[in-house]
Amino acid sequence: MARILLTGKAGNALGELPRAAEDVLAHAENHARAHNLAKRSAFQLALRQEIEAAGFRIADAELAALVEKLEAVRRGDKVESVSVSVSVTDGPTGSRRVTRPTVERDMPNKPVLNAKFFEAERTYPDARARGWYDRLVGIDEHKRRLLLELELLLYPERLSAWSQTHHGQVIHACAIMASRAPLVLLEGDVGCGKTVLAETIGDPLADLAGGKVHLLKVNTQVRGTGMVGEMTDLIVQAFTQAEARADALGGAPLLLLIDEADALAAKRVDQHMHHEDKAGLNTLLQRIDSLRLGGRRMAVLFITNRPDALDPAVRRRAALQLTFRRPDDEQRTELIRQAVPEIELSAKQLRELVLATGAEAEKKFGASYTWSDITDRLIPSALREAYTARRPLTAADLLQHARDLEPTPAMGKGE
Image 1 (cartoon, helix red, strand yellow):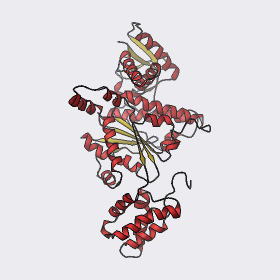
Image 2 (spheres, helix red, strand yellow):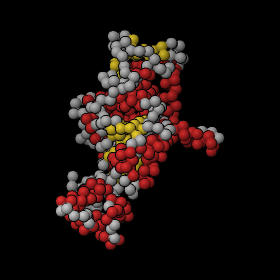
Image 3 (cartoon, one colour):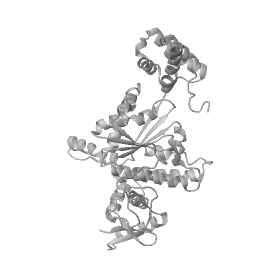
Image 4 (cartoon, helix red, strand yellow):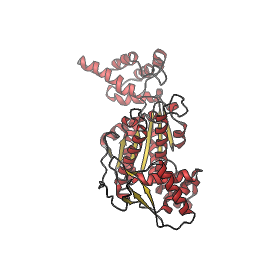
């Protein structure tokens, strides 16, 4: 079996990849066959992922040369090792996958996350997250589907066990499921619960997993300032750090949340799209594809208010797409009832509030109320007025503010 040796620019030894060349290429070839991909592209993707997961970066030319050498090995050349020149990444990474210690520097066992790329890491179970999750009423089907899909993406062995129980073998459909990109797309109108659901799903997932779940939310700074090569480099570094963090978790799931994903994944057909944005999108897609081969318990959550702006390649890769819409009359009824149970609204008062936040608002302002319009604006406005007047909150307060407040404009209107 041929070893893949890593060297610095000066030819100094840096380490060795843990898997033999034949193992890496065989895995990549199976993936290429299952997804009708070009073998060379699959080889390059797999090798880049192995090298970057080890804490190094490889130039495109070096990667192409490495593939040439390894394809010769596949054709029968007898070699014990193949060397490739790489560079050490700027950010700390989890290098435990390198079988020999580096000579340029000692790499930490537990990566320190760069605040330039991520907000503070969140860990579940978390009682506060569970409270927010439970308050998301009217989207029970979205909750169910998201939780199920994350289980299938993060724990493919559970699907295999199910197949063994009910079919006596792991059927081919399970392999198809397991080979999908671990990407979930949450799209739709503003204020309809996408981000809150993504940021709280970790709590019920922790119950399902029987242990801790971790979430990293990508900072908007990862888009960069538009300098040539900047966004591409930042995306690579962010994913490398996230993958290193996943490696350090000992099998605990890691969710990578990217809000306003359309800023990173806009359509490449847009003639006004800057070439740097196109390069960044291509890199983002490559990193998502590489997660298929990594074997980590890691899933990416994309959130966007502008689904039409997303590149079609993102949508094709998504294992699950959930569309969020403004609450209908029934959902607003339940939302209002749960928000102020102590007031004991009559059926007539509840109908008036539902009408004011729905059909009347649509006629007057061109849009009905979103979920957050009710919970973050209507209820606080009415409560504020009652508090200022030092009197109880009433149905009249709610109805007055429901008729006066302008709901959040629908996407494409008022922008």
